[in-house]
Length: 482
View 1 (cartoon, rainbow, N blue to C red):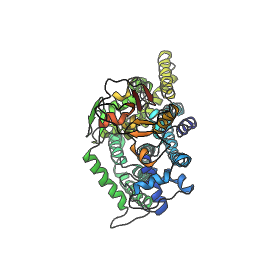
View 2: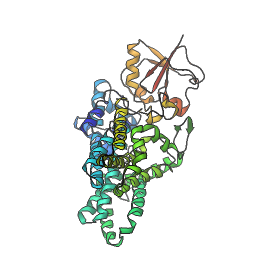
View 3: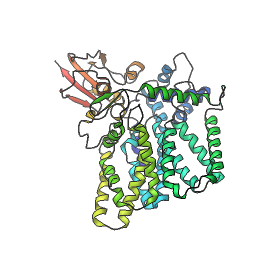
View 4: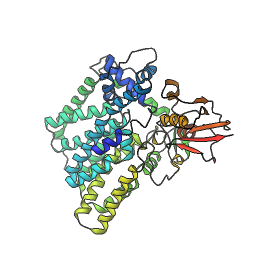
């Protein structure tokens, strides 16, 4: 966990703010500064408030105005101030990385023992997608931590539905729902699969009253998180969030997968994304686990991950692996248990293979440091843009690198329409003069293209079959045309 934390923190100074970070920070500061939560209510407040604590203690405040969106960028500011506020905000997400890691350790320890728990935690804390989204002001790592914690606590509650465990389950459920509304279907689907697994030895009647206690505790906790706001109903902002998320799902969202653009979700988006965003060492170990492990206790962890993935495959919103990040909790538990059992059995060939897969997994992410956001495995090779885009590749995180590259090479003007256009409009380190980017032909002089702008929104159209002269990170291509 310490090594993973250091790797996460070391990325703060490398990347500019991504597309969603200013909004999340602004909404959290609105809550802390005014007690209101009216700015972009589709996301529940837990992660946002944690991210806003550091800037708030540093003296930043949210001032309600006609356009709250602009207030987020005023808070971020420019230059060294922006670096400081962004770092303080990102540090607020780090506790969710710790919580998720502890859940992985505790769940695996309960299912397969301490050696398996250690290996599972090693696998989890070296996963590039986990490291990437633990270092950004977003809601995804909070969801991963709290929904897995709620699933784990529900297992403890199922064994012994005491008053203490009922209260703990209610609080865990509330924190998961206030991390992100995806927790509702993810937990629901996970409990159905877990219940099917436990059905032969799981009596319902003795758990009815404890379940009511847990549900009531969850409702009160959610209301408390929303400051006991009341407008005809308790926590009206929470109910409004459901309506906004439902509308977003019905309206769809632009996405890109396997060379194709989509506006509505396709069932294979998340399986393909996981296939290229997960180190192959972990994927192969997961595939071999049924032949390496005999412990049925990890079946609940496998059911948890399967439930998350199956529900996500039905969604009409396909944005990135960050939306199914909780699957890695169950996968690492299964793989950690399989590895520990293999080593304990002293099967030399199998043990050597498992050790090699773990080393491959760890090295795969380490060799691509600090580009955890854009990480892809060997399947994608040197052309990840043929497989994924958006927050799986180019989330606007390289604008700072872009500015530094232009200064080093004396580029004073360039034809470029960045994917992270707010970085240009709202301020950041100085950039060269940005000229309009034509769709059908490059402009004379320097030209730059953002991978997500090109792949997701088909701009510009002249890029195909033109290898770039230079690349900035893994997100921005450059050409010079005399």
